[in-house]
Length: 155
Image (cartoon, rainbow, N blue to C red):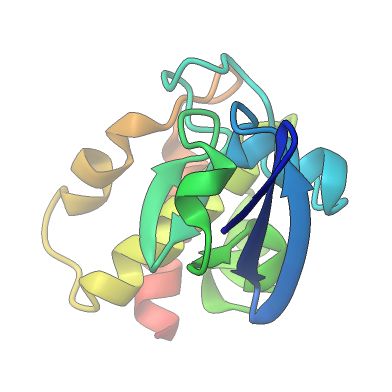
């Protein structure tokens, strides 16, 4: 990371593509992804880490991008929901109706994708435990749960 007057130049590998951007040291990863890189899939919900709509993968681990500074991600890999194109979880959410208004969907997709990658064998209520960090204000989570079960079966 190179520091400039009031700005820091960071390099991120986002969805497999190396990107360089100048950021303020206080800029969150969420704001940089949305406002400087045009990747608007991660949503600003609560912006204090409660809802999970801003979830991205940081080095293959789900993180809430509203709580992470962009400078902390310098030189590291970030995957957003845009990087999950044509994955089993995306197809399953479409087929099983794993969304209603769609605002929280990107966070659920990213988190569920990581769950399936890290735990390819479905075990009991692991999906419910894993996804406790994501909130949906529209549904009863049944469609989301069905979507994850279907994606596990596809994988």
